[in-house]
Length: 358
Image (cartoon, rainbow, N blue to C red; front, side, top):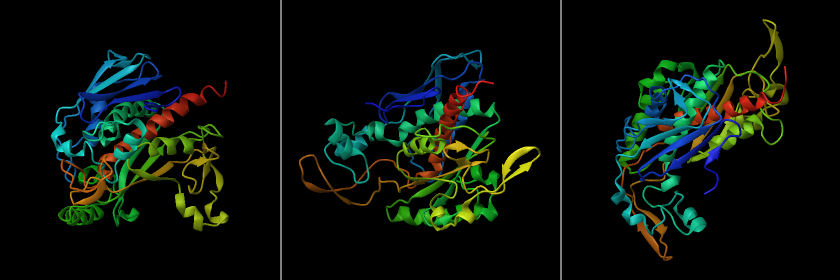
């Protein structure tokens, strides 16, 4: 399988399956001397792990990370960092009826068409559990960026028809509710909506917002490796993402140039912008403003109501999915968007240092 790694200088490769012995990642190209330990990485994994929040899959995984190499006496050594997370709560019997049946909305049919074989236990590499390796690797990138004064945060900005109100934005609220929403009233409304969906054996889509602050201007390659193009690739690689927006995103369709352009001015001796419709990126290069990203996640495809599908024998059948599944993806995916953003920016920041000698 090609395509299990991302990055050029700061590169992360993930490995493992949902119902295998474990999964993890290898990070290569991380500079030496970055403070790092398992406890720091664990804070990111705890935000993603199953069973950690209400309205998430009841699958219980500790998701304890082990650093196998690349860190000595609390600092990175500059050599490959190998990370491992054991699977401890597999229930592969829940997927026995899927060995020859394709789940609607899943990658089952595509995997069979591509390889002529697939791991039907939870989806194998196509499972959302693969993102645990991404989060562990991205935590290292986030620490590297913090040392450069760059900080990344993420939250759920919409669940189904329920949207957060910017006027009620409260950073402290993000970790205070089951949905990672910065709006307590929206979180309460989302709970009512989700409970109704679960009674109907259904699921819903969600939107995750990610913001990068402290980003210097000049990062990103101006043609095929544009900063927004690389961010788009990284975030689209997360399972269930169907749209990625930078800045005003699709809102630019209705805007005039006079409305969409961000005026430049001088503040404290440096170039700044009066607005940020660009989302911090112009011409594929960071412009010094906050980078604003939104990722749209489709509804969880594993729903418990009966669905029409086909099997490997070409027969039309009815399928009722068993197992343990999230009714909404966004609350656990927010940290995945955050860490994939960190991996992308860390890589391009290191690439930037090869472009200009000072």
